[in-house]
Image (cartoon, rainbow, N blue to C red; front, side, top):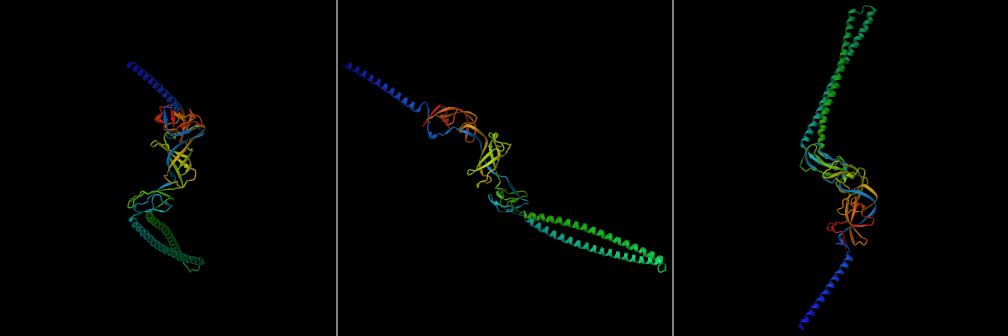
Length: 421
């Protein structure tokens, strides 16, 4: 009886295990069916809050090159020192607005003031000497005038006597002898020669006086020029602004010795500015003169155009100058950091989308495109064209209205389909 009961129990246990296996298989099948219905073919799950999406659109696609830079003044000048001296006073600081002629820095040089006084006395002494010499020569000229007059009177008197004696001699009354007449005639010739000699002496004296006056004036002029030079040097100890503008730099310290030609202050004219952009070497090939540019000051937008492209490459960038065409905003000032968008081309009637991460232009890349339910993303091969600052052209693989993942997908790049929760 014991043997029969044991066999019956074994058959019962085997029958129960069979039903357990059947139930487990059924549960697994149902779970697989439900998973398939929920997750489809997805082999990876991503949180929608951790990804960024973008929709493909069509229209005119503006290709821009973005670069950073600064505003620079077109009229900027270094004010330099014309004299040497010690910096006694600094009247301005960077950022101050100055007008033409306004004091910037005062220098000191005591030797210049001593030399100025010396030159001033030399001018006065030379002027006095020239006046004395002129008076003396004018006195000598006056004496010559008197001598010429006396000689003239002597000649005329002798000539009158000669004329009278000639009349008496012709009358033949014996009142004048031939010897007396000839003697008078000789005296007339002597007085005439003396008169001519005195006139020649006066002429030479006038010429000499003119030459002396010119020489004295030249000497005085040289001394006056030396005086003016020293006086100007004394005035130049006060260095003034050569233009109206904003002080950019004052590279001096109080007590510093400044040499001739040393830079005193850098002044920029604030109303005339250009933009200097640093464009990457790989992007400069698309930039041309005259292209439209939008300058972003982070507070305002300024329209401009490319006016110059530096032919040299420095540290992987090329300097591009932009002429500003619209009115300057209030915050515009020299050395203000800016961003510039250069419009290098405008492609009409094309597809484009926000630029996905790690998607270079003119390449075929794998992008995750969402289905109509926006619940699954399938990896799709997409041919990209030219890229702009934030967007890229789509040449193949997508159509208008398609939604793609543009954030970083490197963590699940090996999965063909992902589920978006």
